[in-house]
Amino acid sequence: MHPVLTEVTERIQARSAVLREAYVAHLRQARRPGPYRAGLGCANAAHAYAAMPANDKLVLHAQRQPNLGIITAYNDLLSAHQPYEHYPQVLREAARAHGATAQVAGGVPAMCDGITQGEDGMGLSLFSRDVIAMATAVGLSHNVFDAGLLLGICDKIVPGLFMGALQFGHLPMVFVPAGPMTSGLSNSEKARVRQQFTQGLVDRQTLLQAEQAAYHSAGTCTFYGTANSNQMLMEIMGMQLPGSSFVNPDTPLRLALTQAAVRQAVALTQQADSGMGFQTNAQVIVNGMVGLLATGGSTNHSLHLVAMARAAGLAINWDDFSDLSAAVPLLARVYPNGSADVNHFHAAGGMGFVIRELLDAGLLHDDVHTVMGAGLRRYTQEPFLDGDQLRWRDAPTASADEDVLRPVQRAFSPDGGLRLLTGNLGRAVVKVSAVKPEHREVRAPAVVVESQQALAQLYKDGQLNRDFVAVVREQGPQANGMPELHKLTPLLGVLQDQGFRVALVTDGRMSGASGKVPAAIHLSPESKNGGMVAKVRDGDMVCLNCNTGVLTLEVSDAELASRPLPERAKDELWQSGQGLFGLFRQHAALAEEGASPLLAAMPALSDTVIEQP
Figure: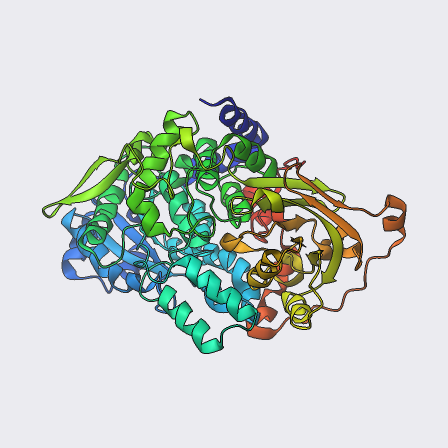
């Protein structure tokens, strides 16, 4: 075992000891022998089964076979979730084939960041994760289920399902993915057209045609953003079947994997301590962090994984990410960290190859419990159909394309590319996987704005043709819900390509699409919370050094102390439903604590003080 992996894991266990003990005690108290519906009153049971087919009712009344609860994030607005429309029927039939029953326990919202980027609705995006967690808990609260099947893929949906399901962590849970769309217009060509549009070189019709050629059918978007990072996480953490993350929708193999997920859920109900909460220990969380770093995954998980761990009674922070990143090599280059998409990654060897490489290098914990049983080594295999039978075989021993996927010995980089930045502005993270070495250190005057639209207007007005550090503040969870600032990527990329030294510093997010421009994101404390970023003025010199991990405002302490914090206007965010989320903004935790308004209020967690650096 790599010493850094051991050190970080033990540090998390020590830091979380009291918190984790309280959580596990909650699980043991909630656990019951036999079917959970056995204790229901007659009227309660009649309500629960009233609409079930007669044969299912007979099975339920016998109280010998498990009943599975389905939580679905289906809608046909999200291409990734459209395939879920017919999953409930498939899952119910598969449950009957194994002598069990299944019911849709509830639906959760699923919004698309790709649709709301730069729009008012993006202010709901981060907190939709917590709404999904609550909706998951509502669906599972009827106490008639022995296991859960969780249907979700995209950005906030998987973290929300994960957090909500952990409230019922005494039950086994299996995530059921639907897969990515087939490859369309290449991601590099899509990015080129976007930059051309930003420069006024092509018209809107050309841009729309390019976007529609890239996002063209049902399935997850094919770039390696948060949605596909979610799928990687659920696989490397053992929450879904081996090799199931990146199988395309509406294929025989996809159907076979969906049916097999039911079989595993039924089997888990017969095993002691197979509940998701028991499964999600420090080793599993560390495995997720390692997977994120080794594949160049989404920066959003420096928020989400923190909140997900916290829901299981585990406290992680950005020091843990940064220390692991220094030891974990980058094995994959998938857009925006390269030109390939997730279909290319899957064809080159995929998750089975990555997991075997990391296990053999001592960079993953094998001694974990997964939905397939004990040990992560099972996840070095990939599924295939032998006739109509689902089987697994060892993943390829060699990458089919080393421009996309490499072994540890020939990694793209010796580190994972996610780094902690500290200085008098606070703490932030930066992803350097796609940032060329010559762009990783920027010292330039600040251009201070309080929205991405304001910076875009400066660009249109020709005022940004120079070296600068864009300081985009009032973008944290307490200010406006922490929307992604993805609209800044093309314009900053154009300026960098023109030879200017540019960087971004923000208390907001840049999402899984963080790219070639150095971006200090999730700056904590945020400006709304009295963070020093609130005192930055136009022209102040800012130094962002990804190599040394330093983020410094070159203004004296005396000068900063003399600068008053700006007066803040009353919260008047009402567009697109934001008015309903005032309490969420008011109670949101710091970014490094997961930015959740929920977890600090949970009884098992609120009385436990966790030291932060």
